[in-house]
Length: 475
Image 1 (spheres, helix red, strand yellow):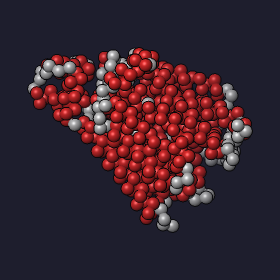
Image 2: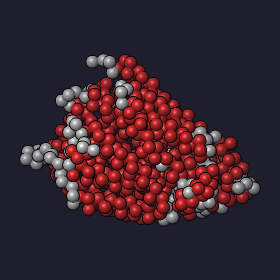
Image 3: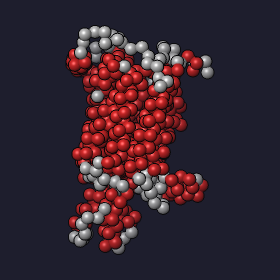
Image 4: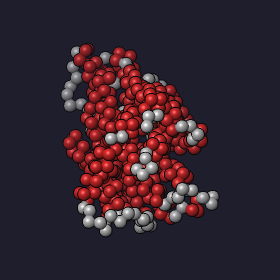
C-alpha cells in the first residue's frame, strides 16, 4: 500500500473526474446508436443506418482529432479553466441534444458535445503524467485505465434504468458531469509550461502544431504503423456503432431474460424493454464487465511479449470475437463472442501506446504520443462507413423488411412507426414478429456482415505482421 501514498491528492481528484466523465459519456454513447435509429414509439429518431454511421463516424472522429489543438489551448490558458469550460459544454450539450430531432440538428449538437469532450480528453492524461514519477507511472496509468473502464461499465447500467424516457438518459449524463464541478474545487493544477510569458499568439501556437504534424508525416514508418492500427479501431468501434443495433434487431435474448427473471429479477425488471427481451446495450456492456474482471490477468500474461507481437495476437483475437458477435441469433453465443473480443482488446489496445513510445525519437516522445490519435481518427471515419452504408445494405432489419414487402407486393399504410410497420407486415403474412425476424434472417443472411469485419481485422493483422518483419527493422 505504500506506493499509493506516493500519489498527490490531485492525482486522485483527476482520476475521480475521469471516472465521472467516462460514466457520463458511455452512459449515453452505448445507447446512442439505437436512439438514432430506433422506432419513434420507443423514443428513437428513426434515422437510417447511413445517417447514423455518418453522424457517429464523423462526429467521433473529430473528437479524436481536436485534442492536438485543445491540448495547446489547455497549456496556454490553464487546465482548471479549460476543464470548467469543458464541463459547461458537456452539460449544455446533454441537455440540448434530446431537444433536436432532425438529422442536421442532432449532428450539430453532437459536434458541439464532441468539442466539450475534446477539451477534456488531453487534460486528465496530462495531469496523471505530471503527478506520477518513474516509480509510480506504471501503476498510476493502470489506475487511470481502471477508472475509464469502471465508468464505461456503470454509465450504461445507470442510464438504462431511465430508458423509458430518452430525454432522461441525456439528463442523467448531464447530472453526472455536474458532479465534476464539485470535484474541480479540489483540483490543484499541476505545473505546466508557461507559454503565456512568450509573445507567441494562440494562432502561432497552432501553426507550430501543424508544422510538427508535417515533420511527423515525414516519418513513413510511423505513418504506416498508424494506418495499420486504424483498421483495428474501425473494427473495434463496431462495439458502439453497430453491435447494439444488431442485437436489438436480430438476437433472441429470451434465454438470458428467463435466467435473470428466475434468479436475479432486478435485472430482468430494469434492463428489459419488453417481457422476454433484454436491452441490447446491457448485452454489449459485457465488454466493459469482462475488462474489469480480466485486464490485470491479461496484462500480466502479455507484459513480457514484444508490443508488436502482443498487438498482432490481440488484433487477431479481437477480430475473431467481433466477427462472431454478428454470426448468431443466440444471445449466449453473443456473450461468449464478446468475451473473445474483450480478451483481444485487452491484449492489443494498451500495447499501441507502449509501442509508439518505443519507436519515437528520444527528443520527440511527447510529440509522437500526441499524434497517436491519427489511427483513432481514421478508424472512426471507416467505422462510420461500415456501420452506416455497409450495415444498411447488408444487415439492417428495417431495410430488409422494405425489401421483403416489395418482393411480396404487400400493401402497408404509410406513417407507421418502425415497430408498427414491422408488426403490420408480420400480421399480413400470418407470422409473429419473432417468426418474421427469423424468416428475414434465413432469406437475406444479415449475419454475413461478419465477413466484412473479419476481413478488416485480418488485413490489419497481416499488415502488422509484414510491418514487423520488413518495415520496422529498417533504420
